[in-house]
Length: 230
Image 1: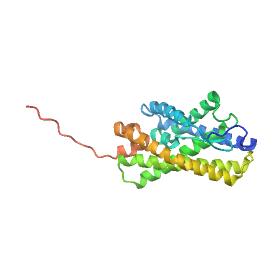
Image 2: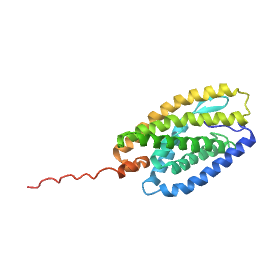
Image 3: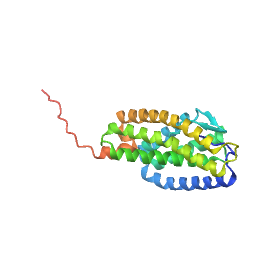
Image 4: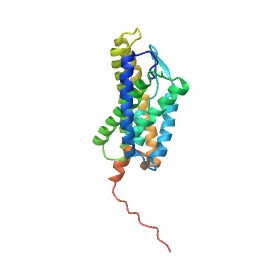
């Protein structure tokens, strides 16, 4: 969902730019509590994975594009604040180095793909984690649910911004139907990818999954008998 230059008017772009800057500032403070010797390396891997996933674009309509977002995945693996920063770095690199998304629309793209997608993905994930059985095997399902909701949520916010400050000659209702339709399908795909990636990491190193750490802390101590020596 990379918004190009000129798709939204100047006042709307300025407002989203201010929101993006404020969100990044808050995330920088919050990430200090999340980053440690496990989270820091994972943040780089997450940014690389999100970068690769977002490079696969296809047109949705009126100059907008659809692709995987990776917001929920980033939040679950490295924490919501670090996830916001990881996705934002990807968007800046794409805009400056690859012309994927407009420079003047960078604030809009950060707001949608970083703040909204990560925030909604994390909130849905934590809600599902609270109601699902307190087992590590449930974490990938909660992560997939967060991904499923986060993608159309970002599309819905984008449509709201277009209704306020859109410049393209496109009916808002038509755009809403196209964006929600396509991004619901993308959300299903992103949910599957998120489920598989989080499940794979948990199977090997559950301590590397930020969203799984509360469950690790509550696991009962296992005492395994040592082997008998003759």
